[in-house]
Amino acid sequence: MSKDERDRAEARFNKAAKAADDARTGKTGRDAAAKAVLDNMARLKALRLAKEATEPAQPANPTRSKPAKRPARKAQDLSGWLSSEQSGGRRT
Image (cartoon, rainbow, N blue to C red; front, side, top):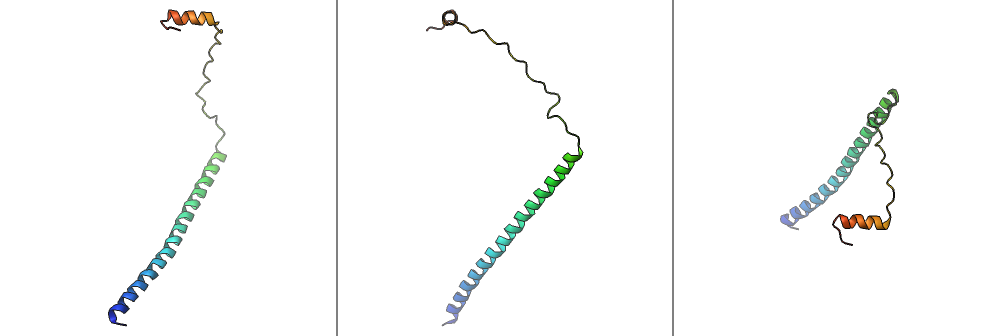
């Protein structure tokens, strides 16, 4: 085996080894980042629940009142509706 062939084979091996190493460290890096996010979410939830437990319960929106109900309209018979449509300029 010549020196050039040996160098090429070594370069291929080093490239494959580096790719495998990157895959391992990349996975552990993603795992660590995901764990950090989950830990932070759990911490914030605990803080929110503790704060809600110490504060007195408040109504959802105290300034808002219910909208006024419309009075029920009396049903109109068909002939009355047709005459109102014709007088309004609509053809039936």
